[in-house]
Length: 130
Ligand SMILES: [Cu+2]
Picture (cartoon, rainbow, N blue to C red):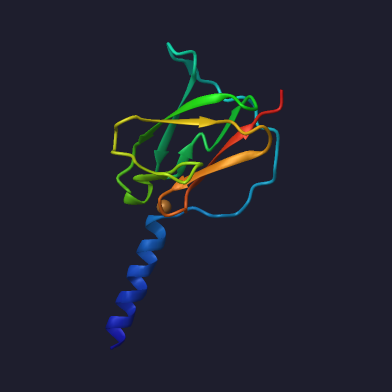
């Protein structure tokens, strides 16, 4: 009996460690325009690493209303981050090591969020101050 409950607690602990990420809000601070590269279509592309610690960069700045392509590449085995929830709520699979392009639009003001499929890791597309 005791062994069983310990096992359950241990499994829960592992699950939490496996998908770490806190939901605490960061204080709003001016986010600069994130460096990217322009594709042949004139749309700025920004590479985002989806790894052990979440999204790098985590806050992506762009000009208000700017269209961007975020190029997500998952670098970690953790299944937690293998799915991306886009700002419009779509779930997108991120196969490990394969860049996946997601078109987004920078909001006119404030920010819009994206997250892992389990809503534990978060990132944001932020209207940068110019
Ligand atoms: Cu997660």
